[in-house]
Image 1 (cartoon, rainbow, N blue to C red):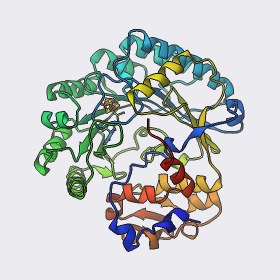
Image 2: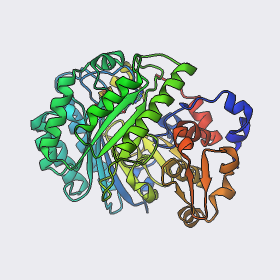
Image 3: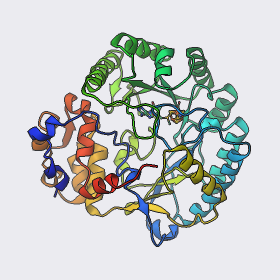
Image 4: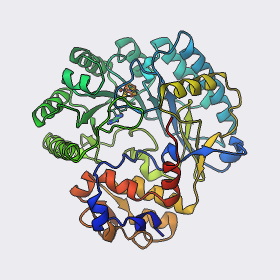
Length: 449
Ligand SMILES: C[S@@+](CC[C@H](N)C(=O)[O-])C[C@H]1O[C@@H](n2cnc3c(N)ncnc32)[C@H](O)[C@@H]1O
Ligand code: SF4
């Protein structure tokens, strides 16, 4: 069943010898680099027939700066008028998508980026209005998560978010040490970060998430502890600790074993620090204060609390957003390089043919199993064997000999397969090893631009 794993058998000495714990962050399966142009482009009304749209994601592809590490789909230096034209296009897309949906019942929503708060307060109001009116969703009635950045988390914008029902706000801080922010090509000042965090707390939005990065050049255990302590001053309900990745077409470039060791040391330190501070570990990256389950992280991701509703569809609006049905994941074209991102955004704002799916990946039963496996296994609570059996009619350990393939990293009892602490630390090695041969080949064949 598992050809990719057989090629270089996880657990084998060959696999271990070339193993990096930082093979890749499996944020969602499959990655967009496995998507291809759809020919013919199917009508959305066919794609969504009989599917339940439960999550809504709106993508705002603008940032005030391009951070050295980031390969998200976003552009800087938007010329006058582009954000307004983008909102016009979003509205056209939302109307076309809503018309194609079969009675959506949204239970969760997120505005992500890029940096949604790159939009000013008036544009944010428009974003809420158009989303609610066209999609027929009350954003005050469901959990709504919004991403922001230190420079754009201003009181006037936060007032709009709070008043219109945002229940979670996620801010990228990366480091409280200015020299580390500079080393990551993330020019920001600590005073600006602190003002943003104070403003978020003053806004009354219930859940604050702070993103921090470890493995930055010059970062030490002491300076990492310093950033963790600084973040805890605001007692955020959630923290994401990201190992630094450098990828093609981003501003940084580095790959070596010493760096792997540095990241692993800082991971363990960060994990232990947050556990001692009373946080629960949800996944390798995500930590959360105990309490009633808060609003979920970004929908459709490994960390989101909606993972048990994997059968729900996700509707993505905006030119970098993905949409998921059970049979097709689809989006617009994907790029990282500034020139291509600009072209894709410019094409998007001129578009009128929003009633079709453009680029995508068709999931058969085997890919649905793998998606469920990958999105459930790498959480502390692990994968429910009953849930898997009720969905696919088989036992996950019959389908995938996981315990032999990842010795010491996974453990199972009658009800659950879950990662050990060492397995959680190696989530970014386990996840990519579970990709299907087809997804692996498509990703390898993707030409970055
Ligand atoms: C959409 S951004 C967060 C919001 C906002 N744009 C900001 O930067 O403040 C998502 C997060 O992913 C993390 N991230 C992005 N690229 C990364 C990389 N190459 N390595 C590690 N973390 C990364 C950063 O922590 C970042 O805050
Ligand atoms: S980290 Fe955030 S602000 Fe920086 S380029 Fe990426 S999305 Fe934009």
